Length: 514
Image (cartoon, rainbow, N blue to C red; front, side):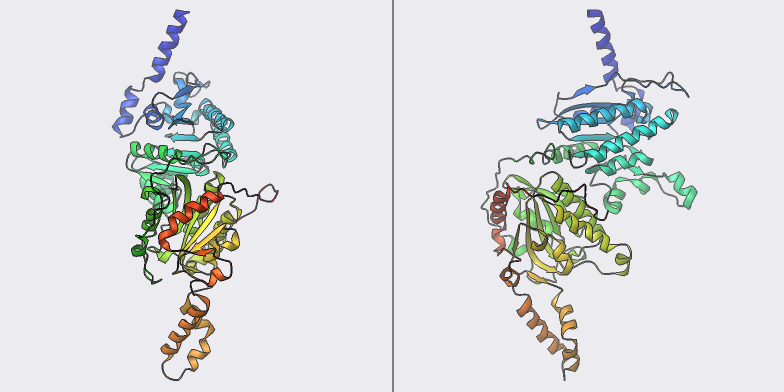
């Protein structure tokens, strides 16, 4: 027995050794090894590996003497802040982390265990793609991963951490998950690489120019977070996991609040100009209201005219959606609608209450926006809010005009509570545009100063249809509140709504625009 144990110990020593030539090359590129990444992600000493002795059964096309232990992927589970998390980490040292039959089956197994156990899954991706020598079985392995990604969606949190290349069909797996993290300089995602792009279109680009971290964080919207190094990236993966429930049947983890629930936010008086045409930073407003001024923003670099973020109020996790008046005056466009819709949907999947801060002049006008599908994309956000059954509270900070007001979780589409600040302006459109339509003939017929008549009509329109209590008198706003009381009002309201139970019609699924 001792001899057998000794052999196992020796085999596992070989398994854990990543200080070989391939490991040194990995580090020379500024990259960590798979096991170093797992050690940073999980609590110390908590990792339990499975299938570490798995090898490929393929031996053709030069694979006979290239059948390493693990088959290029480390799989198992551990804890993050004491809560169970499943993980797989592709090992670029071994066969370039290429996905073969055994490699894929190990990932399938850990994905199945994550769903059956009701715990989050973190994928640490660093792979050259499909293992060509294994032919169609490698492609079938990808199909199994994609199918499991889709079935696990909305059941457990799925986080993809891109720590190397991810090319071709492999890029669809992270795209199917809830949140994608990338690291500048080492992470790339694309369907067709620079050589193919050059051959087909004549365009010359580098891998980072085509699909690097900043490209996907600022231009495509594929990535949710981008970092300068792996350590800070994995630290924020742990942070995000600390704010998400283990699965869709649990509530997000609460923690004792050190920030007083009854704290008045008098700093808001200076942050938000009363003049609706003057911009300001909505993020500063949010920071003033939430616990400890901590805001964990999602897709911070993309569609910056809308803010999507996680925060806490009274120790409870909330998802925040807010217009950003300092960018495009806070107007909704295609990208902003898509970004906010996906975030609303993610929060609803995992029982995270939604707080929406509204200061929106409308949808962004323009031929390009119309031709590119602003109607279809705006409907995504509308559908996401309408189908959300979590507690939903809206705060109208200033402007709320037209269809964009409706879409930004208005009372009429199911918000549980709507509060407004005294400077609120809720209307079909801004007073200037409205007067130019309603009183066009009066202004044209005016003898003398047309601008004076127009100004008088604008004041009339404001007095009759846009005074601070107009929407409240009609039940579309539940209360007009002092901005300084926003934090305690939100915390009390969320506490009341904690036991909310919302049902959707019995159906297979809706057919909202994708």
